[in-house]
Length: 302
Image (tube, rainbow, N blue to C red; front, side, top):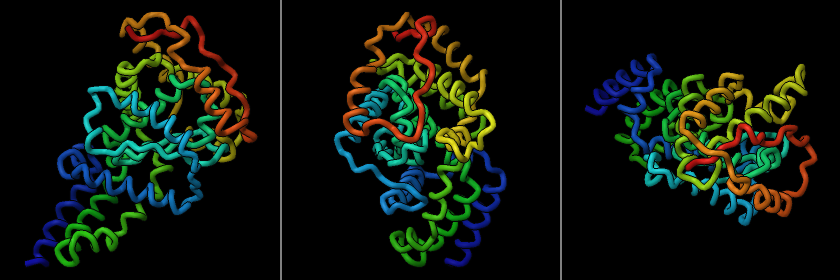
């Protein structure tokens, strides 16, 4: 009987994995699977695997968590009761990046904290990453491998029980791929759109991401010709494609939403600068971004 169940489950999930369709994740993969995979990634970070080092500074972590929590006030975020959305800081000034692993495990590199210059910009980045988790983009990217492991997990659950199956089915081998996953253009556009909508529930300027994109573009142009693997933005650029259309789309959203001219206070720059300097000091591995928010482009929600 169990052998027949194994063959049946394996056939379904391996055939579905060939399609690599998003509907497969929505229809067949429970949210607990997202949380399980994200937790494995978190545990890998705790153990220092894949070169990850956690920054153990609860004052700084709680501060960044507070910024994420303001984004999570949005009623559009469906899984805030299912996913932990816990912030972890990775200690590497040479990497400008953030990622929200499946299940809501948020990772922010110290390099990113040095690069951005106000809370609003960081909130926009966190909102974008939260949208990736909400829309289960990483799960959809990993759907082929996950389908295989899920079939094995279900089968082993019948034989060994859920706890032993969790360890025997090899989930951790998937988690190391999360930082190198490149989202599709469609996924990036969806995360930009929903991240913008999430930001409208915060006290921050909702279009701050456009300024971040301009800073990245200026920085990249200055270092044109260098290998992206050798520059702090390399990991961000490999997982977040950037072009002028994306900047234009960010500006369009602000304009179409009828958002008014910003109040400088909506960026919370002074508070951010004070916290970063007091906890991280000056970065030795990167330069200051060249651009500052332009008054003609900045608007804040009604």
